Length: 341
Image (tube, rainbow, N blue to C red):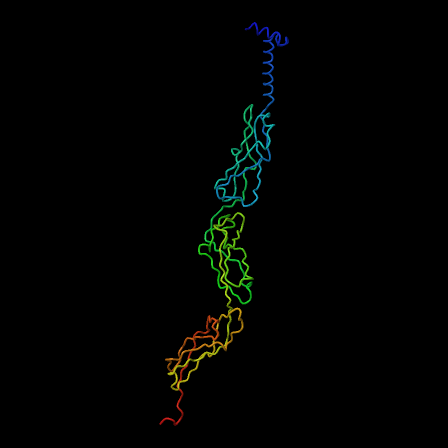
């Protein structure tokens, strides 16, 4: 076998290598060792600064940056190591990820340490460079905590003045479980919330009861609501309120209210508050109204009596009488001189 190999080597390997091979191999090894020794001597340890390394912050749950656009942070990393390794490093070879501790939420100050820096690039030959420092060593973050606020009232956005002439809004009905809403979001917004507005509800064509579902307006894009729509029922009345002043109070006498007694009402007139149909606005006047006092059982002297009222129009509703009590003075006339003996 060795004979064949020598025969093959004599024909395939050049003589410059084959002849005196051992000494030549030894010389190559010595040259290589000298080269490595010289490179090691020249490859001295040095310190460099790598600028514009991106800093990422991992925030605790329910903590956010105040700005809707995430801020960009960079730092300068001080690295120590062999020249051959450092000369090939750039800012993209480093990563800074800092977990923000809960204690930083009070003042927003967060320290970044060399231990937070990671060298992503693998160093094949020689020792790995050492992170010696980070500048700046601390960052001030504009942070905000997410909070939950319950039972914030819902304000229905409408304008009564938009109603067609002759129509009034009696009330707006809302489901009991949807009159208040729970809000979650940044404390700078949620903590000061007094109410949540609905979308605008137009009333310019409202002549009868109607129901519609309207959306709730979020005060900020980062705010969430326990529900975002609410059904509303608007009760529209065709009755228009009206006050009629100076309506005379009448005495309603029974068959026993005579006997020579006289009656005086104080005050003699009252104000009637009523609602009349929207289609009949202005057609109710004091001649159609009859406030009265019952005199049955009244004795001489002053007595406070309730005032009642009826209207000749059946579609008019009396809502109040002002005042609702009057004083009735009952007196017996003095006999004429000489008439009694």
